[in-house]
Length: 279
Image (cartoon, rainbow, N blue to C red):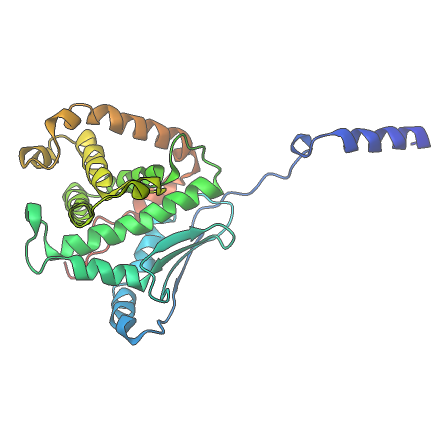
C-alpha cells in the first residue's frame, strides 16, 4: 500500500462516525446471575439476614432469573444501607441492591393475621419482596439489553415486575399481586400527597395500587375477579385492563423474549418462589 492509499484510509476512518465502525458483537449468555448476602452492621438486621440466607431467597431469585441472556453478570445482593429504606440498580456495578431496611419495613407493615382484602401475613411479606427484586431487575434488563422505553422508566419497571409475577403459578400469582396491592394501598392511605410528590420518578402509591391490579385483571379476569367484586379495582378502570395488559405483553414479547433462554425456563421456574420449603 503506497503512502497515498494509507493517507486516504486514515482520512476515511477519521471521518467515519464511531457507530459506523464494525463493533465486536457482545456475547449474550444465560445463567449470569450472581448473589451476595452482605453481613449487616446493624444488629437489628441480623435476624433478617439469617432468615434470608436460611430460606435461600437470593438463590431462588438466581434460578428464576437465570434464563435471561445478558451481556455481563448481574449481581443480586442484600445489605444494610445506613438507615435508608431503599432498593436500586447500579448501572456501573451491574448490581441490584435491596436494603435490609426495606425488608424490615415490609415486615413491620404486614398484618398480624389477615389484613384488608383478606391478605395474609405471609403474602403481605412475600409479595412486596418479590416485587422489589423484580422491579429492580426490570431496570437492569432495560439498561443491559438497551430496551427502549416510551414513558417513565419507573412505570415500566412496575409493569416488568407485575408481568413476571403473573407468570408464576396462578394461586401464587394471585396472592403475590394481592400482597403488593396491600403494600401500595397502605402507603396510599398514609400519604397526604403534596404537589411536589408528583414530581417523583415513581407514581404515587395510589396510582401504583390501581396499576398492578389492572395489569393482573387484564391478564386473567376470572382469577382476579374478586378485585373488582370487592371494589378494589373500579369497573370503569377494569373495562380497559385487557387492552392495558395486551400492551405490556406485546412489549415484553417484542423486547425481552428474544433475550430469554427458553431451554432453561422449565427447569428454573419455581411455583412457590419465596415461600418456606416446607409449604
